[in-house]
Length: 333
Image 1 (tube, rainbow, N blue to C red):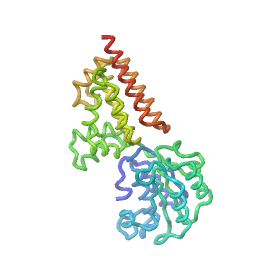
Image 2 (tube, helix red, strand yellow):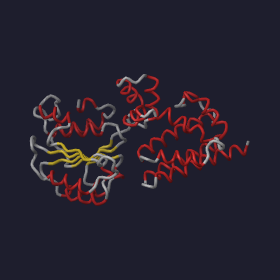
Image 3 (cartoon, rainbow, N blue to C red):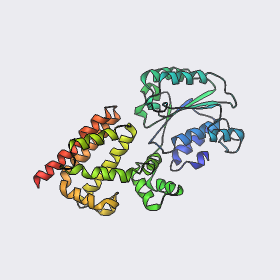
Image 4 (spheres, rainbow, N blue to C red):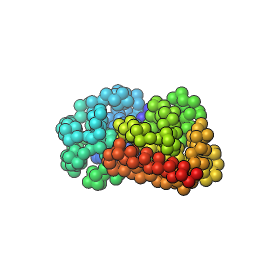
């Protein structure tokens, strides 16, 4: 519960505990790091500590701590994009600002957690900036974002930045096993998750490994990867930008496994061992040079999606490039 339940973030937790125990905390924090690495639990732990009835650190058992744990404390507000929306809009920020200037209802401090703070549009961010410049005496703010650069400099410069590192594979693997996922699958999910427990669970729930393995297989076969198939894949994968990024991560691992085989690497370095025949075939067909080009194209597409380019168009371009590499390899043969 609270800080004790946060795994793999010993440094960040130590810094927060020390600040809470000393009573010297900034008005605003910016927690950065990959999704699902402990930023939100840490933010709620800080909020609970502000209003704990018995100690400087959240005890977990007093009435205030129990309300924070349940997410029902009246002095805790969590702001994020509305369901189905990509951005935190100015109306949401105005509501938050109005509440921030009110006195706490139950405790000593009101805490406002802005999840996905990087999704504040310019109008929202500028409206919030004024509150950071002249913060209410009884309000504290915790912003959560992937990295410092994803938030406007005028916002990040007024927050104390605290970086949360990606979770280690063994930590994710152990957490997955505690959720009842068998060891072999947990190890595979952990290797794919890029330090994010959230990604690992998403991969598991969506059965993305099995589905994408089937969808990737025809990409290197020019006679099977016709234009209609590629356009259909791009259309389906582009429905959600976050999901598209997960698919690109899976794709990068898939072709990286092929490159390991093509370059004569050890098979214990391969992630997707259940698909070795397909991977060996692709490695033999493309060779190390073309696989390196595929991986470079995937990385370029990931960068594009990070800069708000059109998701479907970016995926279209990538899939047709991969097919082109497959045709080049076929003509060579």
